[in-house]
Image (cartoon, rainbow, N blue to C red):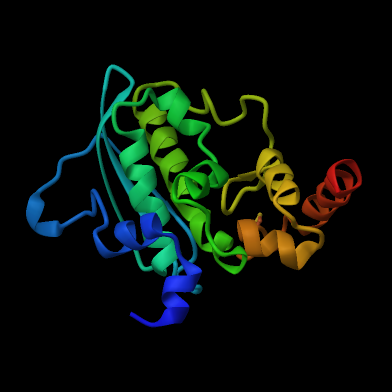
Length: 199
Ligand code: FES
């Protein structure tokens, strides 16, 4: 292991990267109640989350991704954290919550960790659809700005609080606008508003 690798990542990140928890294996025949997929194949960092749910509690989780070390470690940690959690609570988990549990991530790697919680929310949304409760949590106190990637005004606020100051910085942290680009105008307006408020 090079010194650079040791310098960049906490021991917790390294452990979850080397020994990722709850990774999906096609041989396992894992049966699940809900599934969420997010990310862009073009960028090579698509994320899939599968949930086994009983009485609105997440009993078991599997996931897979083509992402980097930070994406793997943060999704591994996320998958551990949400086991036994009510779906409503799991829905509100943010990338920063997971980054803190990992002992932090390098600034230039934060953007790699944002897909796990979005795939998780997509899976919960899938479950809500299947149980006749479509959209029950999605708009709770938030507004979806980027419909392609399900990025809300709250995600933009969190990104600004975490240091995003321009469109590129916001994209680094959230990937907003990287599919059709149709959300750019509204996203930029919110970005400027939050920078004014929080920066
Ligand atoms: S709406 Fe945001 S990329 Fe399409």
